[in-house]
Image 1: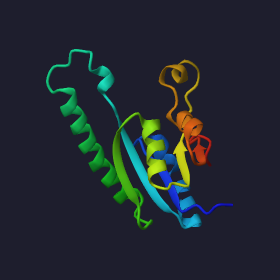
Image 2: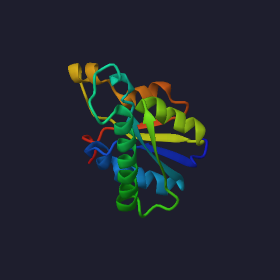
Image 3: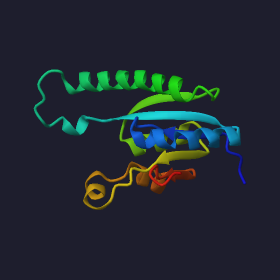
Length: 150
């Protein structure tokens, strides 16, 4: 079995990801891996055809990204203190695509992500970032349903 040196944990700052955090930390510690955290600010470009009064979409995206960076720093400091060498990053674009791009560019060996457990119409409308990551990832993906954990 290949050694797992780098684990990617995409974070969307929802309760779903907070619930699986203890398992992520345990996996990183047991495997002696480096944890990479990533938050993706969704691209607002698909709203460009709508009339948006001030502030502009570009300004809004810049503000969202800088806010996400602050939130990520707080998240790492608060929840990941027991781990050394945690890498954190914020990107913008399509969440699933950016997670895969990050994994390819940073020698990630495993991605661990939470599922939201959407079903039916909600799943059809919103899709699943985790599902898209699983389908397109170049590395193994561990998905955890936060509501099935003990």
